[in-house]
Length: 361
Image 1 (cartoon, rainbow, N blue to C red):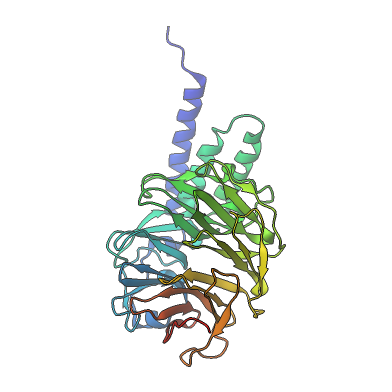
Image 2: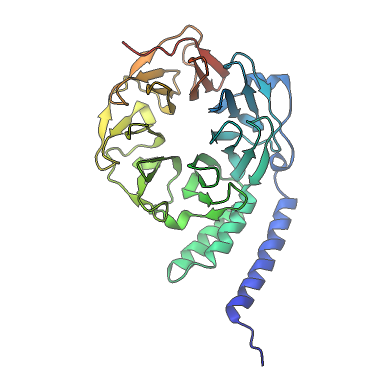
């Protein structure tokens, strides 16, 4: 006599439920998840929130699914083909062809041609269904909370954005965002796993940035959240934080230093894998929104007040860069270096080249 395994039966029922509820949710998904980004000349002046190099090309992303790419160091731009119309918050290319972008409504996009065309790998509806399925497999007393949190994701719909991403190889990467959202892929985004249960973040604080350095992974977020994993992402544990305000981003330099930056011009430097941090005097009061390491090791930060700050000492000190191409108080969100050495900044008024990336004196 064959006796049906109760666990197998439960998973079969749950699987059918997840499949049907996901199909229903996709049918009623917000229009921005179902309609491609509008291709229009106005896209060249859209608010842009992220920019990155894809080999010799620059790729920028921003509001309403707009992605632009430039093959002449940011002098002229073309609009990419994007399957969604949601605002995009961050992007990264692992090589000249393959990259990812994330944004509102839990969207993850992938490009295999240097940013000219994109496909959707994940959205908030699918992410919530994955979280609910994973919560059912949580063992012990943590299952009730995991199920409740996952059910909230399902009930809320795709209203939570991904705010950053980090890929260390073409196959291995993470996407992260509001309310401790964290998903991991081991196959280049073909499938995703909810990873929130691996993070010590009991308040469910927003995750704003992630980087890897020296064999460790680091997360930063709101209310001074600093987390580190030394076991390839299996667990992220809290580091002592020198600041109770939000960190909006993190730089991990080629020399091994870490620079966490964020609210009200605050930035903190660590040379010992996050064990201790020292305050960096940036000289600005506006929130620091983006940063990059240039080819010669110079670090650059940009602020919501339009400041462009450069450091030649691995982030221990910064000096303001001035350029007539930048209008006063231009709100900036991200920065990248063009192939000719110039900086290209992304902000609420579009994209601008900063003519000189000369080191501060």
